[in-house]
Length: 293
Image (cartoon, rainbow, N blue to C red; front, side):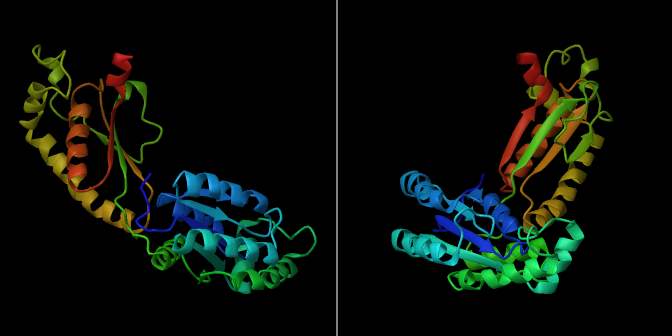
């Protein structure tokens, strides 16, 4: 997980139900904050003392109408206390939205409003909005999510908190054998079985794609090199868009028949290139790990 590029150590996120405070928490989690949602208000202070003041961690805490002990007066006391203790390291964010947007969202998802046990949807939304007026007044940052796509909400939140919009997205690169199935977490799969196979060279059969002689053998395969160049060109476009949209991570899988030569070599080649492009990379050779186990 990436560390937030900010002095903020604690962000309280609240708002009217359905406005997007849960989405805001996920955005902050992707930027290195530990996200905690719907913690009873009485437990917020001990958590901060332990994790923020003692542990030095960055925490984002979600509060809303469901929170035990939640109310404008209680939140006001909490905010005053935290501002005194953490200074500029603390911010409170309130996510709002218009009545029509909230109605549309609840109707689209078929989710019950937290106040829906006592009111119909329209009355529940209005009651929640009225109840949160005094809480909104306590916030350092107010974001109206009406009409915003998740990417727009992300930009607005990160801008106001002074967080880097696009920290380099981490990638997981995996090599594997088709005999044992595709990696379950793979987002993109590249089949390397078209490349010349070192298995048929007696001097290379017992080596792997990590060995220099196998790498030299495959580097002479012009088609394999051309395909990896095309993969790099594709990734230049994809990673730029995904990074700007706040994609949390990407898993690329390279497969061959035995998961020992071609896929291992290709995965290592692309992992080295991606790392040079500035992205954190975790490289895993699935079948080689199994062989060593």
